[in-house]
Length: 167
Length: 378
Image 1 (cartoon, each protein chain N blue to C red):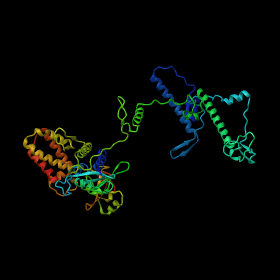
Image 2: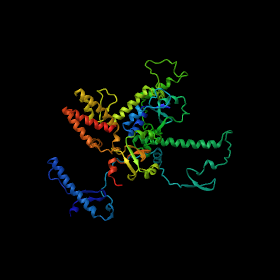
Image 3: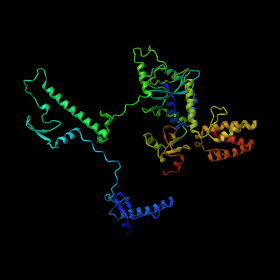
Image 4: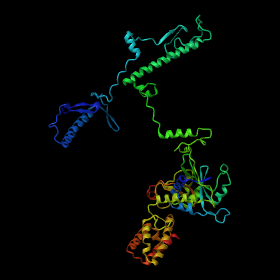
């Protein structure tokens, strides 16, 4: 377990910024943690362990240092991993974090939920609601109509286009 | 009749007018160009005409013709290769009048009673085919006649190789190395064609010096240093990471690094102004309108100032919660509608800006604006 260096931080933040927008600042700097018996629980931070990036509360980090690197399996919330070619990919474990702070959201009709969960793209017919001002290639978080986060992805069409398009 | 006037070579798509003469040498450059263009057009037209006269096959993209073989002979790009100087054997053969004879590829081998190749694998008179060599009276005991045969063969091959290289060397002197040898010439021990030995650079020298300086039993620890000698460089990169946990969690350095990356990212993505002069460390102002707002702050009266301040905070909130905008939309009060419609907000902002310009601050107006925003943020 170690903190991210500057290059890695940039990669991680770049990817998160696509989905969170300016909320990233809130997630990184201001999100108070409620874990641990400490008086002053502190905030959250990012830690790298075996090429995976975790979003961990500071008090947990302090305790995790007791466990040696080979034995430490996981801690906090995994938000992504570095690939062998040193790219950063988001992973689904961080969905709750992303969903709570997402800038762009898309709600799916119940009929197309399963299709999305099986890995298909969302068609216009499956679109229940959509937030304003989504541009092409923005990161979006996908919800069911009951506001259950299902996953995240990249917008292929902007909100305007979605309105205009043929079904 | 026009075509007969030109010489047309369709293979090279070339037309030539042998009868044309310029009326005057050259009056001016422009006229010359014009003349050339005009005549060139005619020639190209002639080529095109004769192209369409050829028998064609119809294709999806149009007619396709097969060009005849070119009649004009174009000059060669490179000079002719120089003839190779005669080898030593060729000179000798000429002197003695030895003619080259064709020899059969296959020869009858008496040892195995079969036809075999003259050279190469499984050839006539091969060492492998001789099981027994009869001893002669002159043979010295303790010498292996088979090994001797092998040695002889090897010496003959070596001699031939030496001769070949000599001949190549002679050819290289005249500059007539055959093309297939030219590329590999530097690998051959032919003097004169070998590449010059490279000059040793400063870095290379330093590397060697560094290696030499630590090539002692103590790793160079107790060696006398030369004047001006630098300590050897590290071969490997030592990566340094921040501590995993420091104090109550995140260390100051890590916090600094995170903040730096975050600020860079946000300022890169916002098209607004970074408000540095005011010393508000967290305020990144994404809209021009707001920075304008800030600059005007001290100019306003204290009453308006406080109102504006609250408005300002409200607005920052508003920016933070942009996405709320479209999720709501049921209430129908006038104020509500005004805020929800983004265009309306823009219009309001413009009016507000105008007022700032004129420094007319009607408290009522500001208040209503504030209401709108707070309503919305709620």
